[in-house]
Length: 176
Image (tube, rainbow, N blue to C red; front, side, top):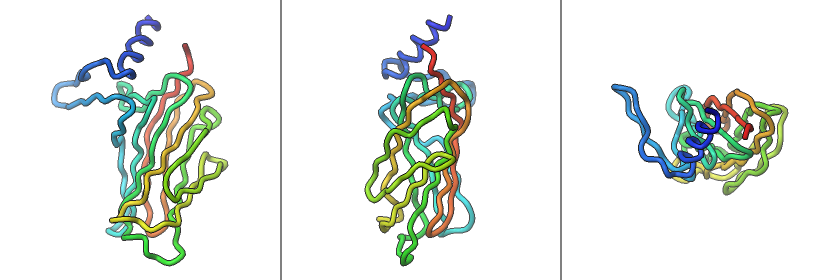
């Protein structure tokens, strides 16, 4: 049975499967893992505060609970930040704190215009001193490797010219 489930998951992750099944009264979309789609966006406070979302990337599927499911050794996700004005507050950098289910995950790379990142006790701390273009900062893309099977969450807190938070549950499966 485990082999059948594994093949089904590989079939979906490779983009060969069509639309997914949805329960009555709900909608479902299936996309190839190379595309990104927002999983959850949480905004905090009054206007002028930041909006942040986590977007799944390569190697991430959704399980039956809506949590991210990662089967294998690596995956990608993006942090998207908007709002908070146009970033013209002098000397106020955008700071992103990413909390990961450690030690199950290891960050192997980050990329994005203007982003500077370093490891932290909880996962990753990134700073962007640039100015937001049209109320949006450049996307921060994170590549991670899975070190052990686990279940946890990835959460993001953003501060700077405002505040914002987002989180998603993640299931990590390194079994073959």
